[in-house]
Image (tube, rainbow, N blue to C red; front, side, top):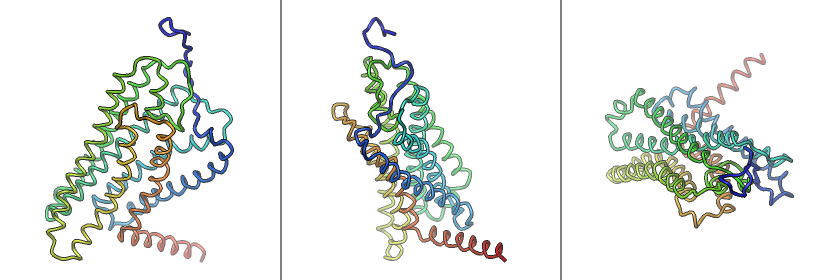
Length: 320
């Protein structure tokens, strides 16, 4: 089938995911390494979800948002990693156009939702530290639910627009995606029409999804830093800072990788380099988030001990 009289052959609705085919001799060891990382990631985030649900002391806005962040991370990794793991062992790495579009849609939706949720978490810390007397009144349950719904709605609507924009393009000639999942840059490279307008629209969308919440986080932390510096007691300053440190580290990791990939000129793209950075933000950083939150948060560690102790007591009673 020809496109507008051209000489390129149509993909016929099918892609081939190259993944790490250049490391064919290491694919089995890599499978086991990334499988272990995936299981650690899932268990860490599931632990946070369960602990923040079970322990009444963690039923407050900060841990409500943390639970939603972990839930998004679980879905986010499940969209990417299982297919990546399967491709390490599979002889055929074919992916239909529909499968690719669905993977891209959920990847963008969940990634964008996480960006805005991190901004909401920064606002929560701003209210807690800068306006503590009105914290319970401002960050009521209704507002928290509305913020999470708004975050997810924004992410999924923006993702729908971007995915539709990209997959309306004609794909012809090469149908090999030089990546381990259907990300925006490598799929755009396969389009056989002029993509300049599409690239500009994608760039603008990425600016909205990344820089807007990132700037909101920076503004929140400027006010937070001013409030912390005004605290006379060193112990009080340390406690206030510790409630923000984990969130700040996670935000830097998330936005640092995402901005590197999506907000730069096309001329500086390197698919191999981008693949390595993508490997970090889809496999390494999600695994680190639960460790960052649990290791720096005494309340989470205490709640985890309670849950483990309760489980041990139940097991003893069951064996009697």
